[in-house]
Structures are given as C-alpha cells and as structure tokens.
Amino acid sequence: MVNQQLINYIKTQETQGYTPQQLRNSLIQQGYNAQEVDEAISYANQKNIYPQQQTTNKPMSSGASGIKRRNPFLIILFSIITLGIYGIFWLVFTTNELKKNTQSAPNPLLLLLMLIPFINFIIMFIYFWKYSKAINELTGFNSLALFLLWIFIGPVGMIISQIELNKKAE
Image 1 (cartoon, rainbow, N blue to C red):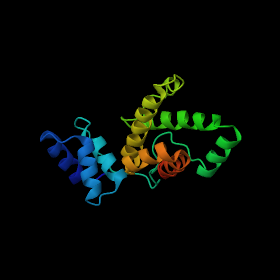
Image 2: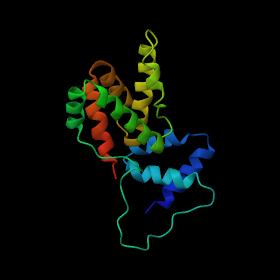
Image 3: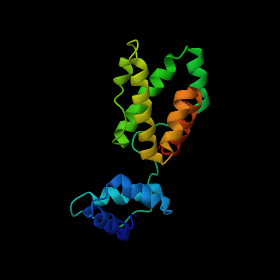
Image 4: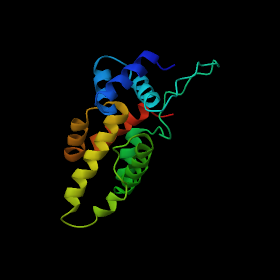
C-alpha cells in the first residue's frame, strides 16, 4: 500500500518547484524503496485520487508493465550466432518496454538512422544515452556508468541492461 505521508510530501515539494524525477532521486537516496516512491509519485500527480485500502490478500505485482524476463547470457549468445541481428531486435523490444514505463526512453526508429554513414556515431551516442537514462528512471541504476558500458563494452552494457530490466519484469 502506498504511504499517504509520502504522497503528501511529494505534493508539497512539487508545489515548491521540484520535479518528480528530482524527488524520486532524493527519496531513493534517503533510503525509500524505488517502487514505493514511484507509486507515491503516481498518486501525487493524479487529481484528488488517493490509494484505496487493499481488500484482497492477493500480492501486488512488483514488476513494471510489459517488461519481459530474459536470460542476459542467451541474448549475447543469440546475438553472436545471428551476427548481431538478434541484438538489434532485442534493443528494439526492450526500448519499447522502456517507452511503456518511462518518459526518457528513446524512439526505436532512431536505430534506422544508424544505417546512415557519419551521423550513425552521433545517433548511437544519443540513443544509448537516452536508453541509459530510461534504465536509470526505471531501476535507479547509474545512467552514466551504463552509457559508458554501452559505448566501450557493448555486450556488457547489454547484459547489465537486461539484468536491471529483469528486476522489474512481471
């Protein structure tokens, strides 16, 4: 159940000019559970809607909407076997999952621009930065570290991204 005091705190802080992302980062650093903070922010941003008392004994899902659990090492193996084609499909699928759950996920159509010589490196930096920010928004994983892994050691970035997504899978 969502903490009503946390919702009230978020509403108060937002009226003072703090963004939901700033509040989320601050509350997580103070030791609050990321899922609890996300739920409280969601309730705080809805007009006059407060959490209902939980009436059933059914446990609430800890997963984010539509995120599929995948084996990170099989992703690498399939990418090697298919000469990278599976890796592209995986990137599109996970980006679509991130778009459903975050605001900072890149548009998967940007991947098409990576086919154009010379600008493909610029698009790659933009895409992986936005992808890393979306992972950070969803799981709290350091976006700069993930971005650097994607740029310098792509397969490790892929594995870390899937491990973090698996933590939020349904």
